[in-house]
Structures are given as structure tokens and as C-alpha cells.
Image (cartoon, rainbow, N blue to C red; front, side):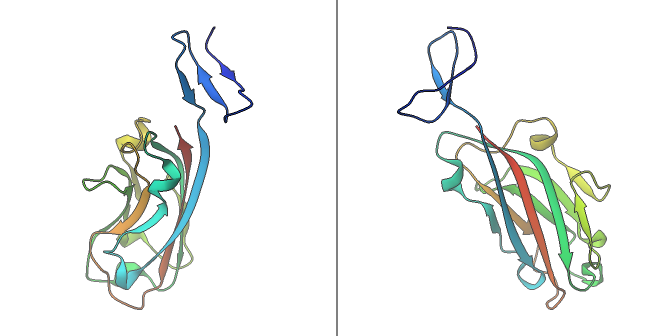
Length: 156
């Protein structure tokens, strides 16, 4: 049988190739997390490991960042906020410059203050079985508001 998708009434959609091996069809997924400035050094899950599943990877396609609060650039602590997988040695998807986080800001991964890392730009995805988290390099000064991060992608 040629490459393509095939529906099996007992299972979700799957892909079957000439080898006869079936692979689960990619699934669209997204999640949103809020990162508070005072706790920025503690990772917050955007997409859980359970949602990705043990034999699949998350491939980010879009990252949207909304900022609600006072300018984080006024904080003397830390430099970056990262969107990465949840592995012990995480794969980075994007790095946001803390100095660019300003009041009422809404940006996407295409913004010049966000560095898109190879796992996203080259499509290699995250670590097998791991979800997505957002975390600052340290806790920033308290009372500066929060960052809302939404990540859209495929689980395959």
C-alpha cells in the first residue's frame, strides 16, 4: 500500500507506509501558561508530558507572548525567558530577551527580540515523550506582572 493516511474504525487515524508499519497521525496541540516575575526561575508547563505521550515528540509551530504588568526590563535580575521541552537537559525552542518585555506587549516567535532555536526553526522538535515549559533564567524582581505564553504545534 502506498504512503498516505488510512482510517481504522477501532483506532485513531494512522499513517501506513510501504513497510506496513503504522504510525499515529500527527495531532494539533496547544497550551497556555502564565509565568509570574517573582517566580520566573520555576518552570511552568505549557503542554504536559502526558499530552505528548511516551513515543511522540512536540514540534512547535507558533509561539505567542502576552505581557501584563510593569516593565520587566527594570528588573536587575536575569536576562532571558526560555520556551523549551521538559527534559532534564531541555531542548530550547525559543529565547525571549527579558529587556524587551514591556507593558501590554504581544509578540510572536517572529519578533526580533525572540531567538528561534534550531529545534523549532529546523523542525527537529523536542525530546521524545516530553512536553513544553516556560522558565526564566532566575526569579526576577517581584510585583512586575506576568507573562502569558501560548505554544501551538504538532504531536507526532
